[in-house]
Image 1: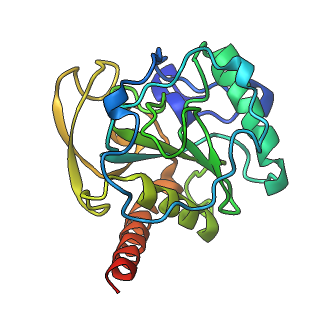
Image 2 (image 1 turned 120 degrees about the vertical axis):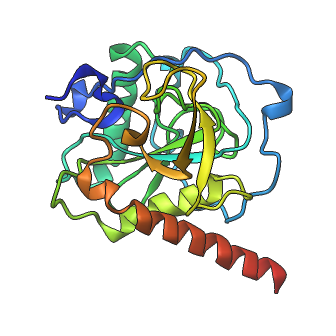
Length: 249
């Protein structure tokens, strides 16, 4: 078992008791100026299974979402589930995770903005609108201006990472990341919480597509998935370049 500070995605536990450990985020009504993206996306929106479709329990959501403006960073996670699930079971797994986040951790909603299963299906996570910059509870100190994308499973050393999963993460990441940000580049971020690897107010340059471990003391997203981050960045860049080419044809 990992230390408590290993946070969102380091433990493998039964689905009904999955508890993700990150600082809770109290949510407030959105500021009108930041309720929608400032610029159109650099890549098309991929198909996304909505909360209504996976039957999220909206009665569990305690507060309205808060919106933080342009997404400057993508944080990749894994959820700690077994990898031997049938993709048809993903909605049930998400419902169990939502309940654990709210009733177990005391959060206002599920922590991740999106979850991708091993078949590449993308699910809406935290409520507030997939097309908006919803502040999640996935990366202590760096929840603002970021998006948390979790791979459903556990990716220890040597565990195969399905190609469909990599592509699913890349598709939603390419869509959500600010259009002026290079997925293969770096971004300046400022920590908002001393519980991260960086003191509150400290400036840090991170990969625009980073692993959870890059800002928090955690094993997440697992060695195997972390090793695939360069591939995810490259695929995100390819998707955005292809979209740009289509716009200029």
